[in-house]
Length: 349
Image (spheres, rainbow, N blue to C red):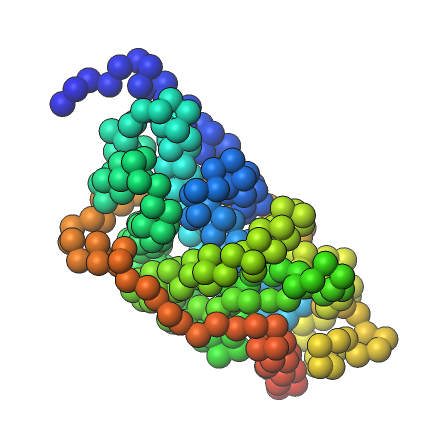
């Protein structure tokens, strides 16, 4: 094996340093993805990752928001946050290093994919990036990154005993599935004069299944990029509204980052009436990420290269068509969540 030269070590160290710096929390990760896409729009995955990471932040702050503290005890809240944060951190740790290496390759007009193993990237991705340098097949690259990143978290988080015992088989995870709390939303303004954003997205089903997560990722990519007009509107919103972690970023008529007195042991009085709040009621509390959670220290990414079977190459050619949701279905799910909170608090001791 050829020895790594001093300048080569410097390149790897520089990419690792920049990745670690941007991997501080969900806000910095989400911004880094968008900043990268603005410079390199041919890398579609970066915009998809930005929007999915926004949703990850909303899921994190929901744990300290209006409803979930009434459905989960403190230990469940902490464990669920750690699971979401660890997945978000690991995907960024692996994928953003690849994006930065691509940026170096693009600037230098040189194939530097031999550095991918030094960055801990699976050998699955090396021929994909080599092909992208020549053909700029954005769809192939996006699907490959979806497969790779879901494989990356599979052995490092999803398949760990902690997740199996404390996340997927917990009453809280079951309740979130039943009440449709596990959604990915893409907000956008249909017309410039509209007061409110529209919603398109998807409910994530069977998260513990690797195949289902890959199918969901590919379906979300299709939903985002198959309609160029809507894509431009989603992208415009993403650039216009910085990610704070609060759901008030997209629907401030329902959600607010400003807290009000909440007693999780008092029976909940419904506040939603159709698409609006009932007169005289508080907006639903949705904190910013910085108000909800401090930055976390992460242990190093463990694990080995997942790529053992060429069957995963077939995923790069196949579409994945799954049911989508719009704002009407989203509102319906919010009513269901509110009903669930009301039911639980009514019978709580």
